[in-house]
Image (cartoon, rainbow over all chains, first blue to last red; front, side, top):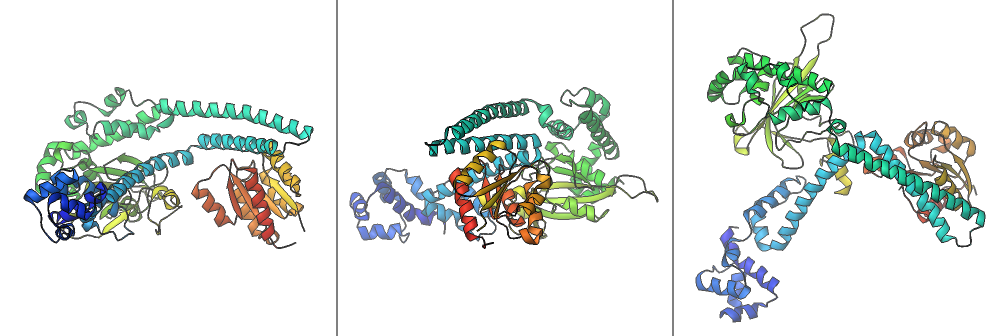
Length: 436
Length: 126
């Protein structure tokens, strides 16, 4: 139903909120109740003086009655519908819903926003508890001690005639446990404080490098121009605090410098204007391999692109060894990723380029075209099995861009926070399954 | 009727409180604190019910539970699992391993008593 045909519905809603009967409002604006009834059921168009009179009687702006819900709310409703693919919500009727039931629409959009916020919190906390053995052990200690205190205190409270010997024992136990609880709680707070204040404790070397690269927008003009070396850049970077991080940083930048020599930026810009983001065409033009083309595209300055591109590199164990994050595609900070990502499919078919249109379940649900290929990282050797890395470029894609109608493949982030109930790749239950 | 409960837990003051609680309710309570020998302790004790902590020195309560379910004499033995980890994942794992009830710390005495009475009322007489 078109927006301007819902004015009557909005009048009825506002009248109900104002606590007016149909007859009261009709009388106030000088029309019959039956005519107002027709207006409220959108069977009569309304405008001009009558609209002004009704809006005045209801104490609202006339535009609120004619224009209805804000575009942002309608967009939020559509997003909420898309985020629940299992439910056949009438997303195309979001505007009508918001117009007819503005209060409920607000409840739904706020609830949806809250779910997104809680999901983000759960993702952070569940990752931490699972992968931080010290934190898990500390919390276990605190809760076990609290259990002992609670149990002993209940016995004392519920048994006023307890024998003196038992009373003494439970008093002593409570005293011991309360001291223990005080110590373990204090230690836990200190640990959390330290974790929050120290990058050294929370950042792995790879994270330090990725943060550093991300701050440079994955583009190093000194390496592009040949005016700086990887060693010089790393040596001058105070945020690479550990020897391990500096070592990874040098390797990443050396590869960047090699790639820049093979595909110089200015020539890449010229080719791009001809080919667009076509990794195969770019690799052919520069007579280089596909991974180099994928990495060079991910290193383009933002101003050369309609939207920033993402890059993920995995080794054969499935570990992510490089991540250039892109909005709309979440990558878990800890633990295993979704095995449905094309970068992992590529590892199963070495040297075969894969192009998949994907969307990630959960927040945002942005669409990407993923270009992935697995490639050997060592020279051929009859006596040693080849080692492979897989590289995946993520190109933000609009529905209209998917003109060829490629199947859109749903992927997740990591099983723990993935909402998809039935998935052949699921390793463990999702925390979103029960609590949300 | 077998009224013996075996409490497998390594926190001495939790052991003392639960033992007191169950003994006052008329149950015979044995205790064991070492995860690595817990399965043998169950077989030797022959209890009507086991209260099993999830995190034990030597072996996890989850592994002990799985072993108990593999042994024909203890395959149907009621097991109440206590844990400081109340995440759905842990609960799900325990249920798949065959736990009878799952209780998170800090629990209340009344809850423990209710569950013990309930499980033993449901258990086949031995």
